Amino acid sequence: ILQAFDDGHRALRLTEIAHATGLDKSAAQRFTHTLYELGYLKKDPKTKHYRLAPKVLELGFAYLRTDGLVERAMPYLLEANKRAEETVNLTEMNGADVVYVARVPSRHQVAVDVVLGTQLPAYCLAPGRAMLAFLPADQARAAIERAERVAYTPRTLVAVKAIEAQLAETRRTGFSMCVEEYTPGEISVAAPVLDFARQPIAAVNFSVPAARWSTQAVERRLVPLVIETAQAIGRAEGGQATLPPLRRNVSPKRRVR
Image (cartoon, rainbow, N blue to C red; front, top):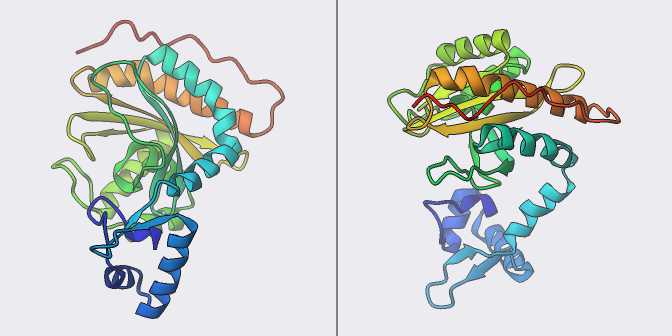
């Protein structure tokens, strides 16, 4: 029921909730009333429309507070943000989507920012492809085929084989880059966080404005840093007693505009 609400459906009648969830009206009424009584939904007494209540945020923050990966990754994300002076994100897979579970924002006035908890399609995002590339081939293909594969921009890849070709390149290089595939004017680069079995558990991601960065500058300055950060988080997640130091080989001071 909570998932029935989104940007295009901010207020719903009971019949609309039943239709969106596939529940019969009586079941939808019971569950909706329970969520209302618990404080997760609010109801307009005049229009009878339901909306999400602020208490829903507690569910997301409870997850973030109990996600040990976020806690262990944060020192590395802070260091990467300091060195790159750009927004750095940590994402995890959720079905065919990626969820943004941690971020350290840029101080620039023009920046690419995503709200924590945002869930976006994996097939057209650098962090999504970074994780898909290291899943077993059948799982990756299933996730791609399950997605609607909308062409958000003229540069969005939607053909399964074209996306799989990008995944093969990511496996070869260790990183994924998407240029204006989801948002115009955005360059996104990501590297997977792998466990000891080389299975993806997360991805580190820089998303930067094309007005401030060229793809060549991203490859030269951000790619080494995003790979290094992802690998360091992977080692920390594996239970090492001390965090390995990050190499100081990426300078953010000179930018190609």
